[in-house]
Image (cartoon, rainbow, N blue to C red; front, top):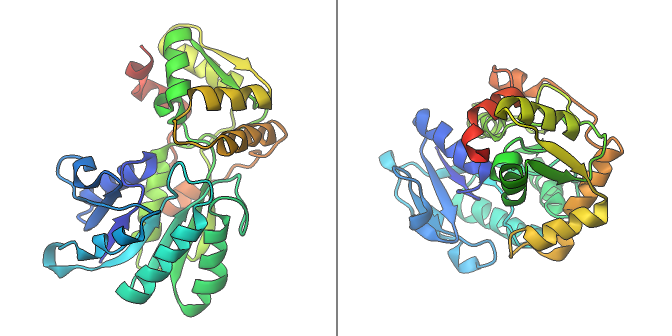
Length: 296
């Protein structure tokens, strides 16, 4: 069995690729840039959710021992306000034309089945495809720790100003590492028994953003301050400093998630990472210690 990773150079898929490689599981990355996007020692094909002519490319790839793609990690494309129609179209194509058996969707705790963004992909998996025997899982991680180190706005202001700006106020967040999300994806894609469930993925401790700032301060040996802003101000930050292909409406959606977090939207913690992967989740202190160079 081979695994196809959409979003192949993103935060979670890139870590998942490394885990699959370490376990000698055949896999293929996808990218709008094609093979040039692949890290050394890995393969990628040109794939664009919005271009149906690229849908067949992954299945033309030659794997060792003539393996075929039987599982797909579904990650929505950046810059597409409503990714569900092309994602569902590709899912149906992969199942009908190439015999794919298992689908794992990356969603998020702020999303709902049948709702905005990939919500309609979620409902398609569960309501339409699962009754036909398709194996599935939906991963709903909370906020990524790596947003502090890889998000261009957060990482830059921490490095240059020793500050970061959020609208979460005193909301508690069980920050999770992308390495733990990737491990969850690894198991849901490769375990012999299908999971066929929705997993809310959290880290092991609650932190307000002021507490996250204190941990950054302790780890970096200098004061890092969280600046509280309101939802409108945070949306403007996303719009001004975010990636140019992110629509304004999506920036406002992200800012609204922070307001929901301030009102208790992330006030849930679990041990699902340890139950599924057998390992305790990465702590925020570990994350800071391993990423000091980003902010110095």
